[in-house]
Length: 161
Figure 1 (cartoon, helix red, strand yellow):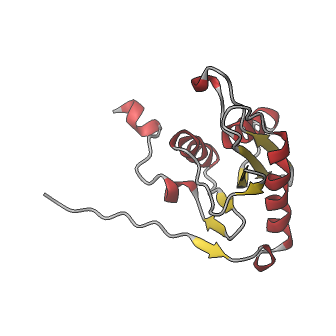
Figure 2 (cartoon, rainbow, N blue to C red):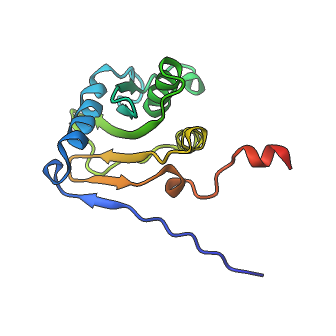
């Protein structure tokens, strides 16, 4: 037997002002996007803002459905729309904010497993790391790439074995 350890490194910021103007702008877009979420069942609004290499910012929100598995997370809505509208433009970053009970959440909410897989696939597709900003009232967590969030990810190499 061999023990293998996987380490994840994140960076935490106590305030928006610690980040660059461009990062602040992207984060604010994700916070604005929560207002457009369709979350009548959970009342848990999530907004995502994707920054593309060409400077475009695409936003997305969670979209719930009475048949729960039919909904979609904000991260995937934003990334799929970005990849659809700009199929040849890499994603540089994504910011994600969550809002419930009339306020932003206390602690950053990480992407679900499906969203992590989609972000990794997008990184792999363009061979470009995607910086991830997780936004809350108390802090901002920054992750330098999706493979940090999903180190044992499924990719095209498994399809050819």
